[in-house]
Length: 210
Image (cartoon, rainbow, N blue to C red; front, side, top):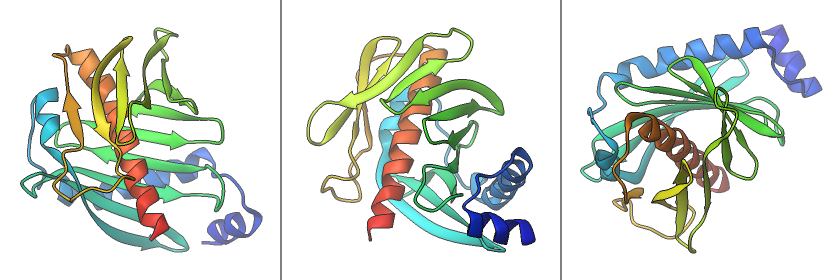
C-alpha cells in the first residue's frame, strides 16, 4: 500500500515485482470469465468478433484494473482483457488479453511495447505500428491506415486483412475484422497479437473519452 502511494505521488514507473503482482491479479480476476468464453479454432472465426465491449472494474488499494469482454456478433464473449495504467499522463501500462486457449500480454512503455505470447517474450511493437520478432530480429507484421474506417493488418509482408477502427461511428454488431487470406499457425498468432492489441487499446481510448 505504501509503495502504491509513493509511486502515485512521485509518478514512478513500476518495477518487475509490481508488474508480476498485477499480472497475477489480472489472471485471477479474468479466470472465471475465461471459462465462459466461446471457443474458436482459426483466423476465419476471428471475423465473428464484433466491436461490442462490456467494461467492469476491479480495485486493489490505490490501483484500478479495468476488465472487459469483447463480444461476438451474436453477443457471446470471445475475448477477456484487463488493463492497468501506471503513470497518469504517460505511456506506461500493462494489457492482458485472453481467448479460451491463448494468452497475450502487452507491456506498454514510453517508446515501444513488449509482446508476450503464452508467457514468453516474442516481439516488440514500435510506435509506428511495426512488430519486430525477437527470435528473427526482423519485422514480422504491422498495421497502417487503409481508409477512414479501416486499418490494414500486415503479416509477413502481406496485407492479410482489416480492422474496423472502433473510433469511427459504428453499431455494436459491427464486425471488428475482415480476413482476406488463409494463414498458417505462426501467421495467425501474429495476426492475433496485432489485432487484439489494436482493438483493445482503441476500445479503451474510446472509454477514456466518455
